[in-house]
Amino acid sequence: MNTIASKTIASTLLKSENTFINLPSAELIEKAILAKEGVLTDKGAFAAATGKYTGRSPKDKFFVRDETTENIIDWERNQSISEAVFEKLYLKVLQYLNEKESRYIFRGFAGAEKENQLPIQVINEYAWHNLFAHQLFICPTSEELKTHEAEFTILSAPGFKADPEVDGTRSEAFIILSFTHKLILIGGTEYAGEMKKSIFTVMNYLLPQKQVLSMHCSANQGDDGRVALFFGLSGTGKTTLSNVPERKLIGDDEHGWSDHGVFNIEGGCYAKTIHLSKEKEPQIYNSIQFGTVLENVVIRPEDRTPDYDDNTLTENTRAAYTLDNIPNALLPSVGGHPNAIIFLTADAFGVLPPISILTKEQAMYHFLSGYTSKLAGTERGVTDPEATFSTCFGAPFLPLPASTYAELLGEKKSIAITPRFI
Image: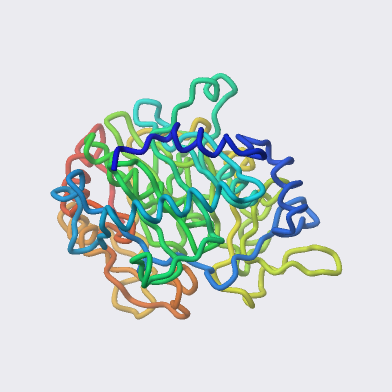
């Protein structure tokens, strides 16, 4: 199979009518409502439910094993799938999208630091999924859009259900990444977070090969320029701790650390909203406005207000909104070298002290072991806190050997400042 070019995929889809590129949020919301994909809340956010898939499906995530990846990806921790399976599914998904009444394409970027920026495109079956991409990734300027050429493409077709016996998948859902073809196939699941984490996985593959450390952490910066990083799995408090009014938010979940400093990989936030209140988390609460995507949040039918305490659909209720919604966001989201690095263990079992200051050696050990907890709802089947060891606090998204990231952390911590590990 010849390498699939992103422009070839787009041109194939553009042969069909009703393929929409980089529509503004308002128009995407109109189309999503007309298609009955969700409802509008009292504040103008768009609320959608994702069916039985209300979290990531890590057991359905695969990498194509070929000459490109054979000696690079850590196959002991990551699942492989053959080129033949990928090719067949790619053709089926492409045909499926071509036969839909409408398709939506987002063209933008991952990575706020220009020299480490990845041009991407996301091709969606649903308008609200494209709105999600618009909120979470970095939007291009009108001039950038004119010359934009994607280096990585997501084909998202949640309505396409795989047949494991025929298609070679584990279930009807699949997330397959090919680094040879620079293509991600997502099918069978409506959970929008799969798109976000797939691009993060790509950056975790590409950035370390450029000696840039990719990190599953949030980051903020004080008026004095001092930067803090908060490492942890989804739900452990990265977004909450980084969103404080007295400090400038760099980002809430995914970052790179280059020779110049820390930069956000995304252009938005993906905050958990279960039990959200204006009193406890005002920045997140106030960021939920027109254009925001609410995922699996129960909406009261009588007045269209969100019920953030209702976990009927899942504990993993989410809000996806652009950094423009945050008054003290640092834009562009690029900061200096970190002065404090905080590991959020979310220890629900009393194994560790509530807070500890670590030596560099202890920090390296803890970073590699990654003792933490999986919290309810973030993965399918997780309903209570589960102690786990998540390498570098991001094992589900790390295609390379763990030592790659740990060694980069060891190198970065000697740049410009000596950070304090907590």
